[in-house]
Length: 417
Image 1: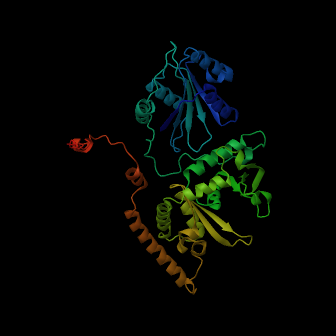
Image 2: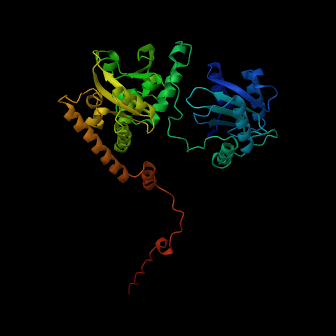
């Protein structure tokens, strides 16, 4: 379980966020603790009134709202009763057991999670001290709850795709009525902040997993000539749906100009990510898959998605790999000939009498050599967290020796006679 705490300046913002999710069918209020009515018997204004009546008891406090999210592993299928019990135990352990709070169970992401909204103002008007609450009370509570409810411990889950937003539901889209722009913004925020990509096609390879496309327009279009960018929703077959949304209108401004800055920044640590991806692909190739279809299927099982580029005649001319474990996107041609479409689409299609067999054998040897080289390189490359550790500035808590602290004495000038 992962617990995150924020302190919004306005209670209305936190309450609105969750209630709008309920209206959109993406969340439900499963518990109202220390309220006079049950959660399903109160409207928005009744919930707001209790919080406001409590907050007016303290005029001096600047932050009166606490917003908690409890995130669980995707494999954990928790019933509302269990989730409510977890929220109750958590709030009790961090000192908010006597406070009024609402528990919302959300279904708008790839992992189960709940949001809890409460006030820091107690019944006598005093404020609950929230200094270091995340580092001290929350961390202690999280560890105890993981044991009590037999939850997967934070940071010890298996290497699976975690905390991915759900693909946009194209069947439920009603343009002008649903929060389409917010849904696209959620996907963009996740992909652009977690994946490593260095071009628009690479970005689109990651976005298509969530039914989103960054569209620069055709060569002769006005949007392309003005170097603009729009975002579209795709159906399951990759067809564009509905009205496009300008990049400048989406939260975070994912315009082409801003993305170009991101492309350059993502060049850092690119080689390390490439080596990690190659090693995982080599493991599949060394197991002698029957054909390209099986190769693609096995990669998907280990969270590597292949985006195939083909022409109108069905000829495959390019591959793009989306590594959903290490969050990186690479074109096959950038990784080497052994990982290109020309080499991999020929798996299992050439007979023993084919004169091109020697070429394929050379490719296989190149694969083996690449694997060996990659293993050597992975030994010499330190892990990313180690690199950050040795290059980041840290406060020096050790006492400085006296001879290093004292200033050199100034020589006295002789008196003029």
